[in-house]
Length: 368
Image 1 (cartoon, rainbow, N blue to C red):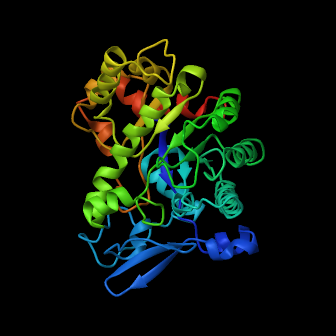
Image 2 (image 1 turned 90 degrees about the horizontal axis):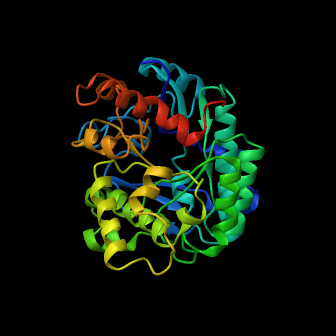
């Protein structure tokens, strides 16, 4: 199929990101790897993450988890845009929408000045990466989460100066930062509506972003935390956008809930609809069902032909996009597009919607 769009790929920021782009006053806040015997941990500021029993190179080595190899080889496109374009050609991907990797760690910083400096450094490096071929490499801006005013300022810079096609934030309610439904975010949602660009909610499991609930529940078991954190947090974020009226007040705001699959969507939206009927949502004056807001404004991503994907698309045909997760270890390369391209589980229209058309709608790529 022509024109495939990877709606959620990643880059891996090199150490030079912090040397070249981070305000010198905040260099000690830069995220980095600390190697121990038999495991590594991430460090960001003074927060040391949980143990990860693998080689740190797996963060940029698709398909090469610790149970596969103890000598992972980093993909050439992780931090080299020329290598990325070559790998896109192998996958027959026309354009890749790019999210950071170390940028997934910095939003746990609740102090405004370093939080903003870290986000700016990530965004500046991603912009330099995309400069290699801006028609195929599409940046998404990392927002600081310490204060809504800082998020709006960085979103404005990312869109108006860096040419990014949207912004993203993490799903957690991080101590010391405002909630997703804080009224202070209203100007940000309005700005994105006016710009016709989305906000994405993107999870990640690294230990330096506070996630004590999952860590305590599963005794720092990375696999157990990883399996639950992504879909559970995203269900809570869908609830936040609906139950506090964000989607009602901002009917043109597009929201993507990434890296959590799609199979949960019909069940959970049915549950939210039931709760509207049984209890109502006291913090929102909803004019539609939660499922109708989702169909109008929301997106999820898939990396494979999940069980029931055809049924998800029957209910929400414009809301599912393809994501490779390249070059992370739980992604696939080469062959990320093969299963969705060749499956008999989807008809041609649904296949094209997932691989091309829905990502064009999400990121407003018609004229990009």
